[in-house]
Image (cartoon, rainbow, N blue to C red; front, side):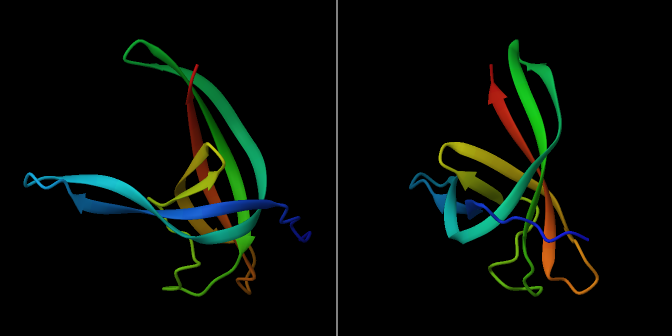
Length: 112
């Protein structure tokens, strides 16, 4: 196994439900911290959603390992932010048996 090059500073964000004051809720994203990562493109495709072309690209994002329950450990349904780019985390797995690194499988969608 090669050592990953953690050269991208990504902000880990978690969804939070906030009252809208009228009995409902809306979702906001709360920053949990910055993780350094190696970002690798896996695949890409273009689809249509409600008549709008959408570019979907999947990524493999490697970050340092963190124990279960730690706020530094990414989870599905969270996301990474890099400037205006959003990477939605779909799955997380240990990259090596010792858990030194985690592999996050993520997707970025862009309307074209």
